[in-house]
Image (tube, rainbow, N blue to C red; front, side, top):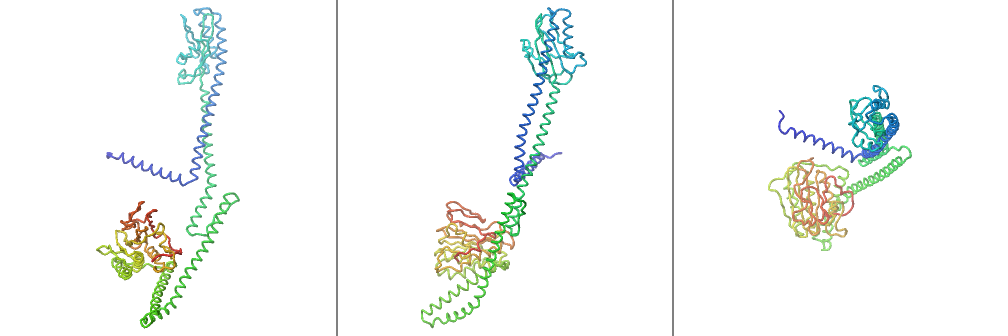
Length: 572
């Protein structure tokens, strides 16, 4: 027994399959130039050939019918003259010999022996007389249904008229061309009718239509094949160029197109190959320059370590004895110590960047409670925050926040973010928030300083970028802190993102997967702070979204984003 609802499920499955087929067809139509060209060619040629086929078939049918009309009209005129001669001797329709004469005339006009007639039916009728002449046909049949009142009225008025009628005289429906002509006599007028079957003309017209249709179908198919062939000749080089371009973009710089002939497509292939060669040369040149630059940075950083160590030892000795010097000399010793600290920090950052550039940076992930990590960062920066008058506020969960991360790198990222916020907090609180969900952990650092201008959130992670382009600055670090932080976030498979607006401060968000190797999809904390004014609206979800103009902007800098490799200044 068929369960209720089975029919609905069948139709639902059928509609789903039809929708999938339609989607695949639509996708093929959008993606394949060859399919579009061939389809348009087939549709256009079908309409054109179909129109011509209809005109030709109609013309052939008209010609056949006109020929039949001409032939029958000649026979009718001849038959009417012959019948008029035969009955001209009779003055009354009641004469005894008149009936025999009419029958003989009908048999003669129809072809003689009624058993040998080829299909032409002849009838003579007369109305309006007391003893009406009955219809006589060869062969004997009832032709009255084929002779309409309109036709008899026209013939009765003395005209030669015709009609096309369909009837059963030989057992099956047959189309007849019925022609009528008046035959004058001494006792009045009789009517002569020729009923000629149009079977041969219909067969000929049908054969002509079939031939025209078959020729049209063959022509459309040939046009479709020709369009497919021509389109293939044009599209294939374009497809080859697209595949070659994809390989080039994937880093296979030695890929080239095959050049055949000297036509436009060959010119396209040659130009493409020349472009690829130039790009390869420039890319290799840039790669070599970048390699030399990285090597130079690494070598200089390592080579400066030895003299820096010697200078550091002497500076530490002088700094330790500064109380015995003159005030000016003591102040110089303090400045020397501070600048050596900055110089050593710069060398450390350069060495770390060189490791990232060389691909030697390794992630030492282990289950780590991030709450103590945040507290260590805050304790380390408490002195700086107290000097600049910026309070640091914490919004941390009451339970441990465990994630598989490299604690040294996470602590370095937080130190850069919190230090950056404290230096630019303008004596306003800095809020550090820690959040976690099933797949990720996130830390936001919010300051209420001058904020970022529109577009600057795209630049803060570039190396050496700085909002204040002046080199004569009194604050700020090496200019590499956020770049290193970004690389640390990427190494974890996480996101480091920035939001800011003029006069509203800035917020940085670090999102890391809770388990090492997992892929991030959302963040537990929103990038745009809840207290931020968004006059044009903006995202307030946990995903990596960008903020539009007028909001200060927020740029997601995830694992696929690039900010390194450029040279500018950055605040840290």
